[in-house]
Length: 213
Ligand SMILES: [Fe+2]
Image 1 (cartoon, rainbow, N blue to C red):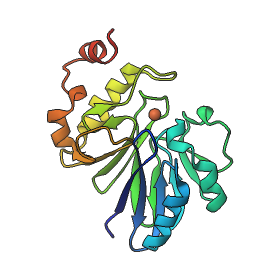
Image 2 (spheres, protein in one colour; image 1 turned 180 degrees about the horizontal axis):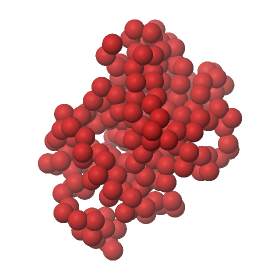
Image 3 (cartoon, protein in one colour; image 1 turned 120 degrees about the vertical axis):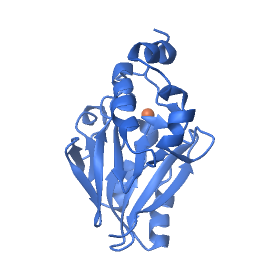
Image 4 (cartoon, rainbow, N blue to C red; image 1 turned 90 degrees about the vertical axis):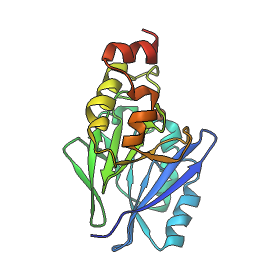
């Protein structure tokens, strides 16, 4: 089994992190959140000697998917998105593949678990392979996604953070959807120490601090 190739790019006015994830053995690659400058990302894949064969969407907010039509014009690839997020897609993209928590995704021979982590949006999902976690806007280094937007649910966010992501091994490396923290990546173990949103003892405390409830 080859080791997952991870290319992290900060692109766009909102400090989005976009990712190319490749299997060095098969030279297949997935793009996580095709946005802002897909021409550049596609050229990067080519420069590295890979072929983009899939797109994984963490959620449907425009700053994560505004390059999807462009991507599909270049590469007719399947687009994996939570079934709970599909209603938010405008316009509807024909290549969407519904994903649920039980599904496994793959890039070449490398398998990804799908973690369903609603809260920021109804269909936020994270992708996990070889101890590397791609969190979109569910989790940032020293932060977490906004819970005050249409479709947000702060109680669901609490559950996603405390009962799903914090249960992962401490050595899990987090790759988030925006460059909002002091470092581009961190381990979950460190984040348990420094991320202010992981310091609460109850849902009630979390809601008070996150939402002023
Ligand atoms: Fe978002």
